[in-house]
Length: 354
Image (cartoon, rainbow, N blue to C red; front, side, top):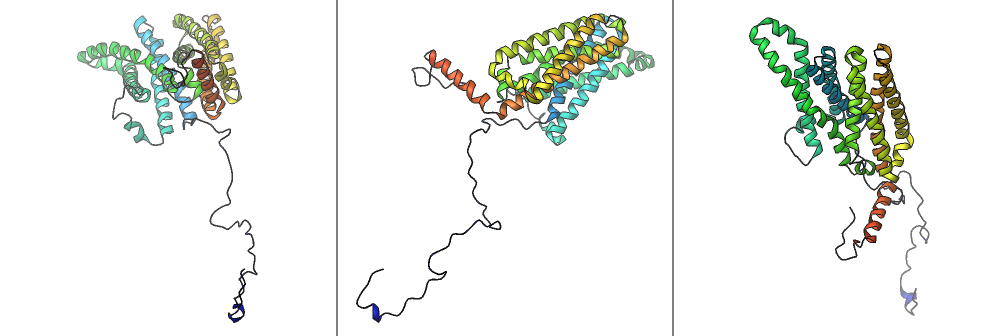
C-alpha cells in the first residue's frame, strides 16, 4: 500500500468483507460441480469389447447344432435311414428356431433383425451370415414340414404325391448346402472383431466351429435315433471330436500369449469341461456299439462338449478385449519382427504394423 501526504485528507476506506484474508472453501457435498477425481488410462482396455451377452454364446452353439443335425438329416434321406432323416430335420428346425430367438433377444427388438435383411454386403460377415441363417431356416422349415406332412399329402392326391417326391430332395439339398456356411460364418464373424484372441484365431476358428457342429449333430442323432441306424454317425462323431481336439491344441500353440484367456477364469472352466465332455463322448461313441443307453449318454456328452466349446471361446475373446496387455504386447512383438526384417516404420518401405 502506497503512502502520500494527502492521505489524511482522504475519507477512510471501508473494511473488507470477510475479515480480510479469504478462507479456503472445503468440499461441499451439495455443490453443483463434484470434486475432481484424478484418473489415468493405465490398465484400461485399448479395444472395446463387443456389447454381447450369453445370448450370443447360446446362438453359437445352437447354430452349430442346427447345421450338424441338418447334414445328418440330409444324409439319412440320401442313404435310406428314416429315423436319422426325421431326427436330423426336426432337430435342425428346433435348434435354428431357438438360435434365432437368442439372436433377436440380444438385438433387443425384432425389427433390428429385419433391418439386417434390407441389404447384402459381401464384405460384412454379419450381413452374409444373416442371409445364410435365413436361407437355412427356410429349407430347414420346408424339410421338417415335408417330414411331418409329406405322407398325408402324398396319400391325398396323385399330384401332391409327385410334388412331395420332387420337394423332398430339393429341401434336403438346400439345407445341406447352407449347413456348412451356417456352422462356419460365426467363426468368421468373431475373427473379424478387434478382440485379440478372436482376431488372431482366424485360421483355426472356422474349422473348430465346423468340427464342433458336426460332433454336436452326431451327438443329437445318437440320442434320438436307434443305434441300428447310427453306425456311420458314431464313426463320424469320433472323427469330428478328434479333429476338434487336435485343432484346439494347435490353436493354443499358434496364439501364444493370447491363449492365456482361454485357460483362465470362466473361460478356463468352460474349456476344461469342453475337453472332458468331448473326450468322454468320443470314447463312448467308439465303444457303445448298439447299446442304446451308452450311445445316448455318449451323444449327450458330445453335445455338452460342443456347447462348452462355444461358451469357452466366447468368454476368452471377451476377456482378451478387456486386458490391454493382450493388445499392446502382440503389437510390440509384430513391430519388433518387422524392424528386424528392415520393414520398420522409420525404415525405407516400412509401414505401421497391422
